[in-house]
Length: 163
Length: 205
Image (tube, rainbow over all chains, first blue to last red; front, side, top):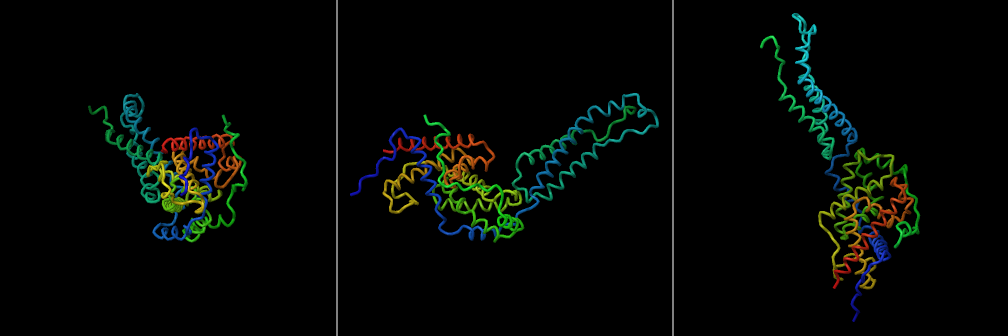
């Protein structure tokens, strides 16, 4: 009859025992695989598309687009609150009869900014499924900000003379 | 009290870490990035032993470890476009394996627990005494628990230090960290394993 296995550790456990556990484990896990993984991995790759080589470029494009969106959104939000009134009230040649008024660039800005962001997202959506981090959040936030700004802004500045 | 740096044992095998890929490896990576699955298979053959060791260290069950290793390789294939071709492939693959295995281990909630002799799955030596087999199984579970608690970075340090037997300085060169930082991290790992063993001993009848 074999003796029962000794209790592996009596308190306290020493650093030497921990070191031995680490080394024994390393030896145990270092044995070669029963069969090569390569064939199984290659077989599973049959259903996988080829790696995307443009993947490194996409985050940079999206980051640039998102940064552009943020700048555009800030400019867009700041401009309507002050610029039309200031222009209308200021005694500048723009208010004089016959003078041409300053064009409202907000719709152009909104359209170009949205277009700039929509294209890379639409084109690279499939290869960037992994991109759910800060860049994507930043881009989504910028779009939301622009949408809110577009909804809140008046479509056309009302001339002061008509009121 | 043992000093953190003083407990680091000088490795018996000092394989220098490669900081750049070999020409053959670079060619395989280039072909794989172009969609050549057989070339990727060759990269798998070159790295599978280390990748499996990382996975086995963290999940203890060898069948689960092989599944996780396959998953890690699939992740690597999908991310190959983002791989920096100026770097060697193996450390990059080790990192993917480490994070994949850590996630799997945490998902499965594996923790060290008392084991019976007939539950010991992979004895290193079938002729080893039963007490040795129990000890090895317990050691693996404690190491797995400690690695799961400390995360993928420490798991990588463990692999390079204890499986590849790199020195602290070599690991520091590979990771870009200071040797003292590596030594402290290894000390924390050893301490975590000690506490796991302590807890295991307290649980034993």
